[in-house]
Length: 116
Image: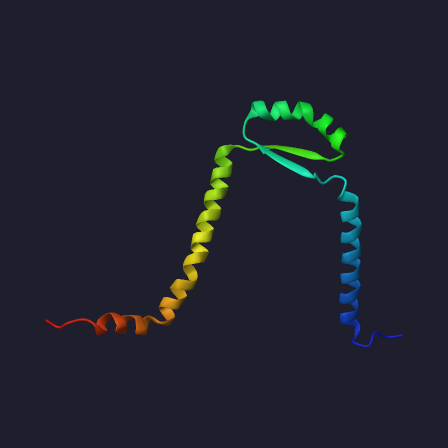
């Protein structure tokens, strides 16, 4: 029996099915490891206080809680990088539009000019 579309599409299909099954199998095993609640904390004292009461909270509510001690400088740096990236992405469409319509833009500016 031959695959009707040839050998290459057959092996691509086999690889895709295998990768899908492997991904599904590994994701089923990791579901218990994934935290259901993630708390970002900025103070070492608060981190220690929460760390002591988290096991009791997890046993009462049946969920997994992950604590993350975050340094303010690192968070500020990430936010600033995201803001600058967003600014760059926001300036690209008007710049492309200006270069595309540059002739009309310049003619509009000079049409109202008065020779002196």
